[in-house]
Amino acid sequence: MAGKSNTFRFDKILFQAFILFVIMSGFKCQEEKMPQFEDFVFVIPVVINPSDSIVLLNDTIWFIGNFPDTLFELNSGEYFKIQKPTLVASLIARRLIGSEFSYSQQPGAIPSFDFVSRVGGVSNPGQSFATLTFIWSEKHYKCRFGIKPKQRGIFTINILNPEQFDLSEINLGLTSDGRQRIPVYRNIYFVVNNGKTNFELFQKHCKAASLDYPTEQNIYYEQKGTFTFRVVE
Image (cartoon, rainbow, N blue to C red; front, side, top):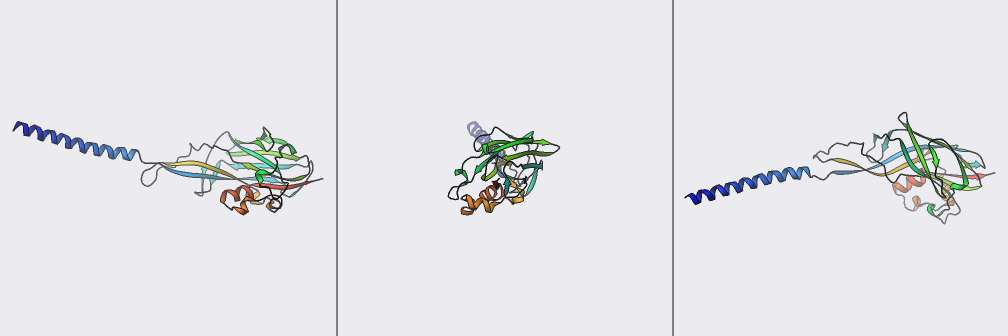
């Protein structure tokens, strides 16, 4: 009888241990729920003035960025506050030499201009790219600089988004099933002059990827994010 009693107790202990294991596994599964990653694409307005397609040699075009630190996120349609000392992107300048070439195949033209920085502005100029810095001040990101063409031709300038953009200060909370919502930076689209970019001139002198492949990214990058102008004497 003692042997049967001991066996019963042992079986009971095993059963209780199994129940405890199931309960603990349930807690562990809840703790290890996969987070929900959400793509973030910001849309930022900038102004280039004057907006005419004809610019006189040695005249000055002004680039103006002045937008609140509550940035518009395209996928959600919501605004998110992001406060950083600077927002650093890249300025691209190219000379358009023929409609058989794509934008990336057109020659770099940063040396074709003098840049006059007032707030933030342009630094580290190369052949095609320069560093573009927006300064955070009074709850706005600000950048103002002049572009003075030094030679005739047809040119396009645009802004390339930062490769990385820290979103750790954004707290999206939890999903309805208790998973953590995590923002993932995908892109920043800089929109020039509300999309009035002299794109007709662009497509006459450059092969437009946004017409052959009208994806969201191509349309924002080429049709809304470039500024094309002809420099004359």
